[in-house]
Image 1 (cartoon, rainbow, N blue to C red):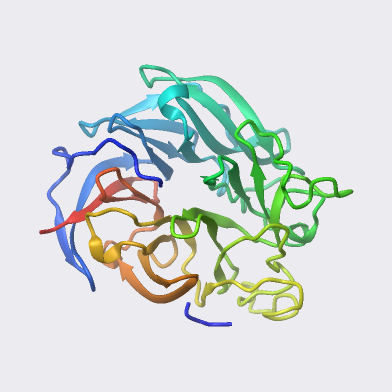
Image 2 (cartoon, one colour; image 1 turned 30 degrees about the vertical axis):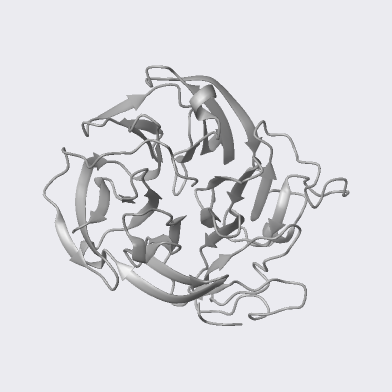
Amino acid sequence: MSRHLILPLLIALTAPAFAQKADVVSSEKAKFRVETVASGLENPWALAFLPDGRALVTERPGRLRILGKDGKLGTVSGVPDVAAVGQGGLLDVILAPDFDKSRRIYFSYAEPRGVVNGTAVAHARLSNDATKLENVTVILRMEPGRGGGFHFGSRLVFAPDGNLFVTLGERNAMQPAQDPSGHLGKVVRIAADGSVPKDNPFVGKENVRPEIWSYGHRNPQGAAINPASGKLWVNEHGARGGDEINIPQAGKNYGWPIISFGRHYSGAKIGEGSEKTGMEQPIHYWDPSIAPSGMMFYTGNSFPAWKGNAFVGALVLRNLQRLELDGEKVVKEERLLTDLKERIRDVRQAPDGSIWVLTDSRDARILRLSPAE
């Protein structure tokens, strides 16, 4: 294998007059300003732009915030109880493809279930005044539940066909990623109402969850549709080294924990090596680990030289990774925002073509990257 490693909304979001004084950064192919749009958030996990120019932001302790066009943060009520333990809590949020008509949003969270917990996905209607969630309905529950606070996965991505991909971690249990009777360590594909598409690869198979799209994943915390191909791309955490980017195909096995390019945190070997017949290779991997999180493909006009690039937030390496692509190969990497020395949890393209980034801490920020010219 080689070591070489969205759809736009109709409304234009204007440059925020409320942002603090910007720093100017020169990178390989663009000169850009970094503005702080909002601060004081507690471990934000995801951001979704609304058609009216506002944005929804999740905070892991269980708060759904709304960022006004004036830069002020409000709180949206009606979020279910979350298991805010370890990596768990309120996680991803996205808009339904028909949000303009339905006002429906989708979100993922660690759901408390007595002594155990598990990733759940729900949809709800955002009230007309955007102050509360109405008709909250859970459409997917990770089974089986487990105790602890590790590896929930939880990215949500609508495919061009209207089905919903959900990434699910293996809860730090390793072997369940290879067990098709449960959801742990899987990418699942469901319809917008939570039902199972008839063309899912394991429909009708005995002792296999029909929601499963692909398996053998560790903890995929970044996912996006590549607009050039319409395919789902995911990034996932390795252990000590071996963070990966995969393009999950229907019914395929991505190897964890039998194959990996990383090692256990103790330094011990993982599984059987880095290759095995019948198991897929990543298109890209990082060693040492960067701890990848949010992911997006840039399609805007604000940064012409970055068009078609992928962007990945790095938690441990504390930067924003810009990846140049040649088809389904990563041919070049650039590390952005290294001087901030902040964990990057999510990255999203705004309607005006700027790039918005969430840092990850108990006193975190929303940053906006815009052209300096």
